[in-house]
Amino acid sequence: MRGLSFLGAIAGLVLAFALAGGGSATAATPNKCGCYKDTAGTCFCAKKGKCGCPGDCEPKGCEEQRDKEIQKEIEAETKKAEASQSKRSAAGEEKEGSRAERESPKTATGTSHSKMTAAQAKQLAKLIDVYLADHPEARGKTVEDVRNDMGR
Image 1 (tube, rainbow, N blue to C red):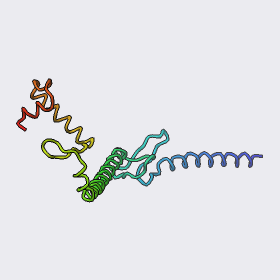
Image 2: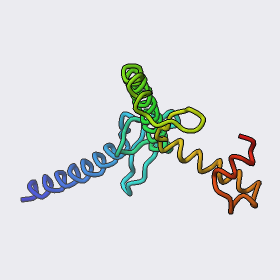
Image 3: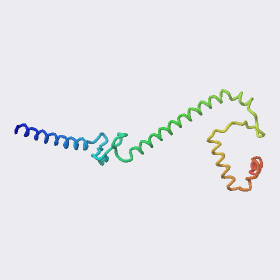
Image 4: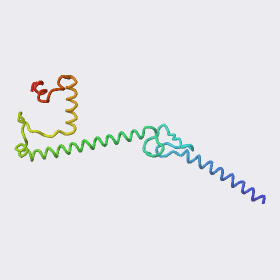
């Protein structure tokens, strides 16, 4: 009986050391970014910690850096799409040019009407706002009157 209780005490000590030692060893083991969480869940990173562990413990600023990279990729893809669209429309205009010239209505100056893009319309609105800020008396005039006043 005495030997059995001694064995139980030793087993209990071994179990306690295993739980205490194993828990602290896993909490202090850094991930591939050089960071680890303590038992309270607080993230600690080495000075030379690097990004690359999304959703895990990683150095401060990694999320912002990823957001900036994604924004740059989106802008690059947008530019590619716009360039591709302008190439396609330029090629289409060359093929359709003579027919479009015959069918499009002409203004008094001889230029054909075309639809503005959303960006062009936005830029025109800004220009009109700037003009009206400098010339408040033009607010009650028609577009034709303003064009005539400008010397066209």
